[in-house]
Length: 392
Ligand SMILES: NC(=O)c1ccc[n+]([C@@H]2O[C@H](COP(=O)([O-])OP(=O)(O)OC[C@H]3O[C@@H](n4cnc5c(N)ncnc54)[C@H](OP(=O)(O)O)[C@@H]3O)[C@@H](O)[C@H]2O)c1
Image (spheres, rainbow, N blue to C red):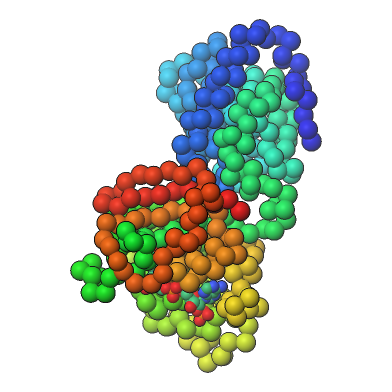
């Protein structure tokens, strides 16, 4: 559904100055919302503001994937302003409000519970299943709706969301994949032999940062090489707000995962971990199956991929059917290379430590400058952190 520019006729009642004020606010909210792009992707960056008599009294942003939407955050800020709720009259939102239950309840319902009578939006949802529906619902309930086309264009403020909702991507049904790794200054993913910190490359602060990221994904994916070499837990630790512990998924073509792996041990207090899924190649040796199931694994058998390993494509499809939408790929160089080559990686998080040298190949050949989009560099503890989206 493509809405008219002004479906409730509100435009005629507005002066040029008021329109300009709305446009400027929407652009400002769009820019500010972009600061959270790596935390919310593949969701759009959204900002919202509540006005009372034309004056902004509270603004809010969608800050975290799975977290409250911008509208609710703006309502919270408006409530804190002390302006009585019955004097809230206008809501500006950079993207039309949602009207369906996702990880959070529909924003249209929350809007209808306020005294707001006018909703001004700067972009429509590009997904044809949702496009215009939220606005239509609000219009039917008697609210004035104004769509200022281009005021907070998604192409400018949420290009990753445009990519996520492209028709061919919607048909493919594969989750958003964030590849994360730690590397030495020279790009190796394993430290120099005999390193004093054992298998760790990154600082404790960077590892805490990873736990916060793990708390905001549906699944963590590694290859069996990482399980055999590092015996990781792949759990979330030291984070209080863990909406749903992520599934732990091992690509393990011939069931080499040891049933004694630490993955299968129960969680300690304050630790969160989802079920362990092992994705194998159909035709694996049956003798390895039962001990893994007895250890607690859910074992899947899929057709092999191009290299004879478990198919990454089918694994991602399987995860989609399990409700997984955001995956953290934490594998070693082999799985990362497969995912880069098949162009399944949407987003990067790389920690670079100050040690030199190390073991194994670097991922440098995949990090061609023109493929990295919206790069953001920061420091976490002793390490440099890079976040970026990947051009497909
Ligand atoms: N610095 C970091 O951030 C980081 C992160 C993880 C690991 N590591 C290090 O990396 C080393 C392990 O490297 P790795 O490359 O062996 O680990 P990996 O990439 O996690 O595992 C590779 C294995 O996964 C299996 N696999 C199944 N399906 C696959 C597919 N479609 N594509 C690729 N592999 C598939 C393959 O074995 P089968 O065919 O037998 O299944 C393959 O040998 C360890 O030293 C570890 O410490 C470092």
